[in-house]
Image (tube, rainbow, N blue to C red; front, side, top):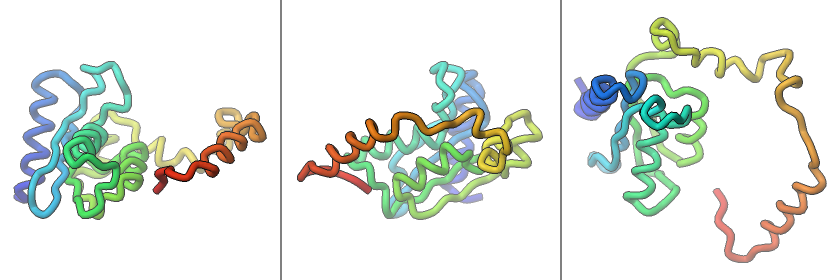
Length: 152
């Protein structure tokens, strides 16, 4: 077994035993060194965004004092949901290694598959709509006018 996946599994077990959330643990590694590890704390924090990957990303960014995790890899016990995948992509992590896939996750009662299929929903226009675009574009113009902005 891979040493970093073993740590992700141990982290997930820690969360399960503490009743913090689902069986999801994540470890972020850079240059073969563990930078951060976390487990699902959705139940503990009463926060649906507290997935293991999200916690590990937050800790790694804080530890490295950057929002850019280029050069890092993430090891996670479950295939990242779309939220976590988005965060992984935004943070520029180079590689994802996961244990169980979304079918495995669905079998234990999680609904990740629904979120992967969201963009294919015919009725999504009843859920998401553009509003006050002109007013919001002014914010974008303000941001664009800044000389010392950070974007990625």
